[in-house]
Length: 109
Image (cartoon, rainbow, N blue to C red; front, side, top):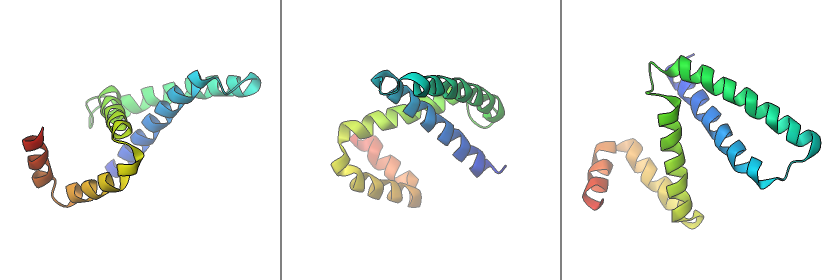
């Protein structure tokens, strides 16, 4: 698996974990669905553990990546969905010239 694929797998697992943690407390699943969600959550926890071991050389830890991901999601939710187009525009600029965008962000923050 290429490093790009490894990163995509890790990000997907973290996204799934975040979704499960968001959905579970809502109590919308009952009976067999609740049991299936519990089993999925256990399997996902095992996959995250394997991913952490597998990617530990390239990433500090899944927790660090997950923490950064959750901080990003929190910030985006505070900004509001009506600004997502502008955020995408800024991210495209970051892809083209990360040094300049980070310089601007450091001046503002």
